[in-house]
Length: 322
Image 1 (cartoon, rainbow, N blue to C red):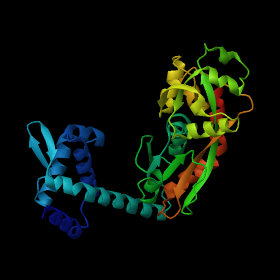
Image 2: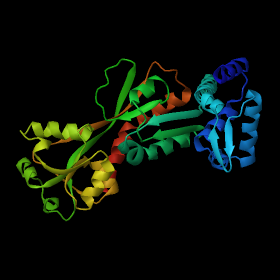
Image 3: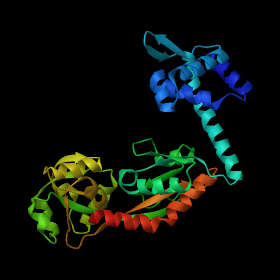
Image 4: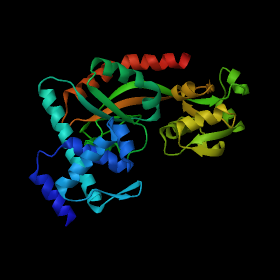
């Protein structure tokens, strides 16, 4: 009954304020009008007023007040997915209409890995915003489901990945930089002063290894296999799936490991240790879904990043020397 009531209202009121629904979604996430007001840069009474207006329109309570606490009502829970779609579609329409006028504005949603989102690209995001000040970038470095699926459904506009081959024709990818994966050791380790080690010497140490499903693990294992060695043969006492945690653990002297040199140099004082005749490279790619409706802001972002790929690569090299 509640579902039909809210659905009918949304259909019968095409001029429903997307701004009000966005306020509702933030309030539903925080379950605190004061926190919602802070996030939205509004006053708390302003948030309360918009919620009351929505409740009056729907003739339903969206929140149940229990003392100082809030919980979503049945109507509030039903409204959330429809409000999300309404706000998302409203945003897309506004951005598309602005694009027709050549006005570059809007929101760009990005999914990044740790290398991209925390160490390499923030400076270039800032430069892009300087050129296009009405474009806002939202970058996620945490897990958010299947990354390619988020591109297909439009939840994300660009993906930054180390995946070398994406065979589906709807996706377009461009190489931005090439990073190196190396054995890393604490500064105090004897190998830190060596020009290189022989591959057989790897069997002499203890290791913190990257998780088996990570790009680092797969690439290192492939390189070692060419030398008749496997990560399974190394004396490993700990496996971590977080690149920063690995670099910091090595920095503390807990063991040796393999890491992106960009990440290791950015957050630790570890030393890369060359292994004779082994070079492990990984690319960083920007990916988009060509079949999705684009905007002037997204086209400008793609053009800026792909044009700046040489500068991005150079910055990564400079960071390794600092």
